[in-house]
Image 1 (tube, rainbow, N blue to C red):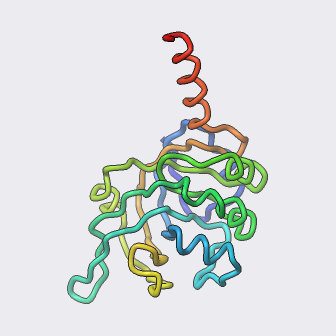
Image 2 (image 1 turned 180 degrees about the horizontal axis):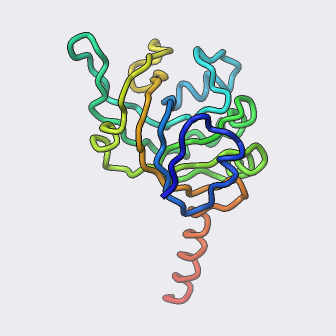
Length: 187
C-alpha cells in the first residue's frame, strides 16, 4: 500500500504501477458529466485543477449545524467521461482520475503522455468512502445540481487501486484480454 499525499506531482504519479493500492490524503474534486462537458467545451473551472485529482462521484452531501457533511461518496461509472477525459488531462495536467469501471484507449494514452493515473474506487462502498472525507472545502457550479457540481473534499486515507498507470498499462484491458482467451478455451 502506498500513501499518496499532496502535492500530486508528476514524479509521484509516474512512480505508481498498475495494480498498486494507494491511500490518498489531500484535496480532490468531484466532477461528472456536466462538469466534464463544460470544461471540455471551454468553460473556466471555478478552482485550479492544475495537477489535481478529479473524482467521478455524485456525492450525497447535507448541511448539519451549518456545516457540509458527506453521507455518501461512491464512484460513478467513468466510461461516460471518455469523450472528454483525455482533453482535460492534457489541458489541466490532471494527475489522477478516480472512478469505477475503467476508461478507454484515449484516456490511457493521455495518462501515459501527460503523467496521470486512473484510480479505481470500490463501488458499493459509498458510505465507507464518505468516512474518508474529513472536510468539505466548497461547492462550485451548483447550477448543474448537487450531484453534478464540483465538490472540493479534503480526504484522508481514501483507498483506491491503480488500474491504469502512467506507463500505458491498463488492468481493465488485461482482464478483458484474459477473459476473451478463457472464453475461447471454454468454447
